Each structure stands twice: as C-alpha cells, then as structure tokens.
Length: 599
Image (cartoon, rainbow, N blue to C red; front, side, top):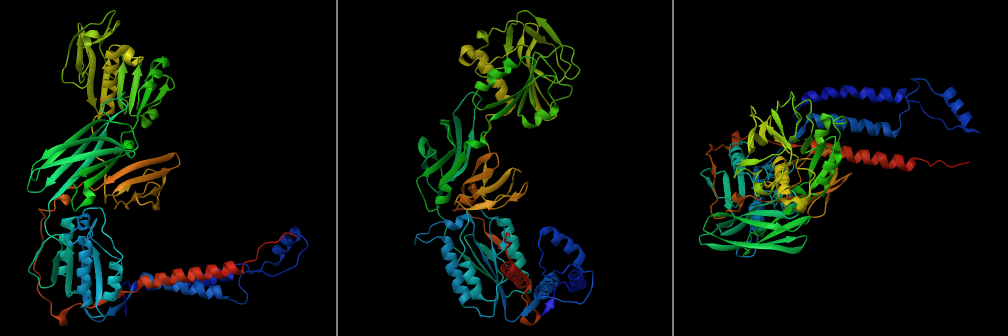
C-alpha cells in the first residue's frame, strides 16, 4: 500500500469542522402547538444555544466516513500489484469495420486475437487497455486481471472516426520504454515495424481495394435560386480503372445521380446541380465494397443558411422588395434608428442614400451614397442619364448581366477612389466600385438597383443578385463536419440527438465530443432544431491498399529484478464507496421524513 499524494492527508484537519457544524445547528424538539403562530414564537423561545451535550446521530458518523474517504481519495492510495503488467493496444478506428473474406470484420478478428493472447497470461497479470481512436486513450483504469480486461473489450465496437497514426506511433514508443511493462500487445490493421521483443504486434487483415466518398458539400450558387448544387469527392483505391456512380436522395426521395470514370489511385469530383430543396441529403456510392462506411455520406440544407440583410434607408419600401428573394431574411432600419450593434445579426448591410458614421463591421452595399461623406470620401458627380461604357467580363458582379438592356436613368458617377476599383464604368466615371477593407467586402453603386422586381426587370435583378451573392460569400461549398472532431456549441443548444437516437445533454458554450458516429445530429435549442451532417470524409483512412506502417524504436530489455513495481490505484474504489454511502443516506433520510398533514 502507498499514497501518491501523502500531503493531502493534511486535509483531515477539516474533520473538526463537521463536529462544529453539528454543535452549531439547532436541534429540534417535538412540541404540541395549537397554531402556526404559537409554533413560530415557541421556536424562537426554545432554540438551543451553541454547545451543550454532544449528541451525534448515525448520519453524523456516515458523513464523517464520507469526508474521510474523500480525503483519502485525494491522497491517491494504491497497492503494489504482484505479477506482471502488460499493455494492450486495440485499434478501434473506422477502417477496422472492413469485412474480410471470411465475413468477419477486422475488429472482431482483433478481439479474437487479443482473447487468445490474454487467456495465456497469468490470472494475476494487470492489464492496461488502450484504444487508438479518435486519439489514443486508456480504457478506464488498469484491470486487475486478463479476464476483467477481456470482459471490457468484448463490449467494445469500432467507431466511425479515423485514427491518428502519429499519435498511435508515439503511444507505442512510450509503452515500449515503460519499465513497468513486460509486454505490449498490439492489434491493428496497420503494419508495425519493430525489433523490440516487448512488442507483440498483430496486423489484422490484408490490403484491399476500396472505393470511397470523400466530402459531400452543398452550396447555393446565388440568391434567388431555390435549388442547391452538390459537390462530391470520389476516390478509386484499386489497381484498375472504375466507373463510380453516385445516387442522391433528398428526404428519402431520389433526387439526382451521376457517374465518372476514375483511374487507379485517383480522386475525382462530381458536380450535381439543381438539387431540389430538402432537409437531409444522402449520397450512395456504387459499386459496393467491404468498407460500407465510406460508401455513403450525408449533407443538410441547414449549412446553406439564409442570408440576413440589414437595410438602412429613409425609403423603407425599397428594401421590402428583398423579402421575395429565396434564402433572404430582412431587417429594416431608418438612418436615425440604425445602431452599429444591428450589424452583429446581419450577413450583409445595405445603406441606401446614407453613409454610417463609422466603417460597418460587415460586408456592405452603398446605394447612391450622398456626396461629401467623410468615411469613404466618395467623389460623385450627378447625371440625369447614366451610360455604361465598360465592365469586367470575369468579375462575379457582372456575370450573366446584359448591360445593353439596362436603363439606369439618373444617378451619379464615381471619381477615382483610393482603395475601391471600378467593376462597371460609365461615360464620366465609375458606376460600380468594389474593394476590401479590414476583412470586409464593400460595394458602391451610382444607381439604384431597388426595388427588386424579379422577372419584371430581369437584367437588373440578375445584377442585384450578383451583388448580394458576392457580399454574402455564396457559391463556396461548406466543409461540413467530420467524425471524431469536437464542436463548440452555441449557447442556445440544450440537447443533442445522436444518429442512433440517443440523447446527450449540451452545456452552454461548452465543447461536444460525442461525434464518433457518421450520420445526422439534431441540435435542440429553445428556438428550434437544427441539423448537422457528420461524415468520415477522410480519404487517407479510406486508402486500404497503401497503409503507412508504424515504426517502434528499439528499447533496451529490462531484467525482471530491475522492473519498477506496478501500482494499482484505489481512488476509483473510494469514490464508488462515497457515492454508495451518499445514496444510502439519502434513502434513509427520505424514508424517515414525514409528510405534512393539514389540520
């Protein structure tokens, strides 16, 4: 027996505080009273003073034992384990789900191999079990026998997350150098290169060809379009060319399909435009193979969020027309009611006939800014009739716009600006200026593209959508979420429903780590439910033919007489006993309480 932190025993000095608390508290007496008023008066008169004869009830001794056990647990008690100590490293990463020719998974074969190894060990051998994914970590505390370790291993399943080979390699080298261990047993699909006699490595399965889905991204090409564009990464990890097919379902209904010829070891992209509006999209890859996990992927339309527009103008009616654009939410303010804090909830700000007093901390569009502003220093010249003379053919602002069909009427030309460039020019200066400042995009127009009229004024509507799409950053696919990665949750999320239906409590602003399963996660908040698609999306883990080996450095053999003693921690047992005693006290206190009865 021993203590890892003997100085913690000084905490026994707080035990007298429990005695003082019992002496200081008022001890009740059973008294018959005729009314509540008399009871209150009597309670004041008969309250006992501090001290008196010490009368300790059984809860005092129970709480004294709980306090003592807590101090002991902090001190870190341990006992020296007789016999040998070994470490077991079990690969539980996603590639261990591969089905082998004998119809068994790699993980099941690894567990069977470990069972044979542990059954040959002495019953007094202490076993520490490590899992490899998503990062190498121990499976609880060391087990006092191989049988106990096997019982825990038999309840395990491989997760949908990839492993970290660099971290796993580091763990094996650390275990190989541990003087407390006589053996390290490793079961993984990765080859292990080691000359150390202490490393017993078992490579589970052989290299196999595999076809994989990588990322599955959704994007809205531009505002005003209800459909979405899907983009998938597909890979052929085999020695022959393959025609890979992908079928997309939207909320369970067939939505689109595509195929591509992919060469050996190559990665290709598939574009699927015009996907119908839906909540959940699923991609299925054909032909199937022994690794089913990376043959499917999920996406949700929630990653293609609505664009929140703040419209600041003395003419509110001009902005109201923007509500007809799919994917837009609108907030309208007059220049007098506008405050910079309004930008915190906005993706794009539009200032019509006005300029804010300070540079807006959001991407912004300035429609016909007034002359003489001191913020942007626009040099403007009024004109009764605007004429377009030139525009960039590769600028996203002008894409698909037929300027010859536009009738700008009156407006203003811009002179040369110090940091904004002209995307569209007129007879007497610029008509559309754009530039970046302090990490934000800014556009100014010398004409008014509002109100938005849709098909009634198609050339101007296309230009308006281009302006808003550029400011909102549309067209770029969303990276999505990957298995094994932690999230920082929004403060409004209270609960998360996992793909298997289990529910996890969420803590405001905290991290969420239970992302080991591929599928759809439902984030439940006070203001509604949002969806997140989580995929393996790791083509390195999907390459089952070219697997980098783990390299374990040689370590000098340690004679049994020089091996460090193995310490079996006892603190978990003390904590378990504390919880049991607390539950016991609560049970008896609850049973002993008497319900109040009305007279």
